[in-house]
Length: 216
Image (cartoon, rainbow, N blue to C red; front, side):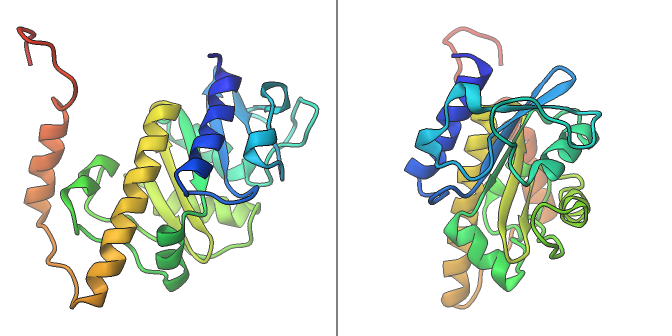
């Protein structure tokens, strides 16, 4: 599949896994000096590859395509500009992440998988109205040194090195939110130390599918 088809498939996957409902959420992908991003207000299964908008990363809102880009294009563009290692951005209104975002509770080191995001905490951003420059700045601040953040009274956003990686991180973040939420109901979690998370992060560097006989 091409980039546009990948984005369409990602939006459907977010609905199928319960991370989005209706026409909520959006996906973007770096494409050279431009950003491909989902259109505004279209249910995922109705988005066609040709509906994906193209926006210059150096631009101020110009776009090309039959449909207007997501109203959240600013923080997608700004993340891709500020974080060159990030290739794809996924934003969802996933229920457990959003529940914590509504309570403005960051996720501490409740599980070793938090190491996948590059730190020991998933921060919650300050609140700002959707689609505004203020929201973009709040998200960038909360994501500093991390691949994700919760968005106060809104949802979550993750940045990955590919669309598949960003989808994986979105699902992992929702799992962490689910675990943390329920641990609070039974007395609260026992947190892992910074050293324990750092050890996990080092292990992740060589984690993955390995072929017999291949060097680690």
